[in-house]
Amino acid sequence: MPAQAAASIGAEALIGDLTDPGTSARMVAVAGDRVDLLVLNAGINSVGKDPATLDLDRYQAVVGVSQHSVVYGLRAALPVTRRQAPSVPGSSTPR
Image 1: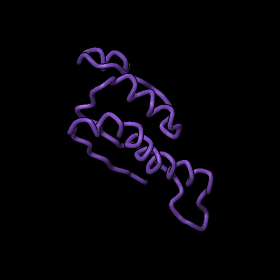
Image 2: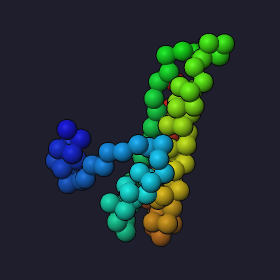
Image 3: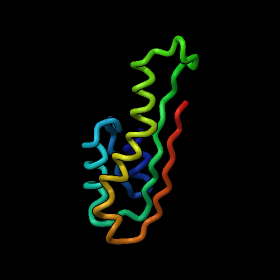
Image 4: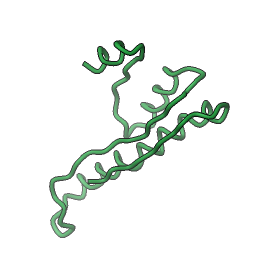
């Protein structure tokens, strides 16, 4: 479905693990020499909110996606974006 939605607007979908910096590098490579808009937003949810009972592996997963993924995306895009002036909204949505 993501590939069909992207194709319908003349884009390309790349599906991958955002906690892997290589995924961001592949996304920028697909974009080529130009990035006009880079939206850096990723987040997953955690059922447990009480720090006393919070599953620490799940906490690390939430932080990894919500914060690190945004940095990986920005870092991968910097060589391209520094040559131009794109819009780069960024957000992190820990839950």
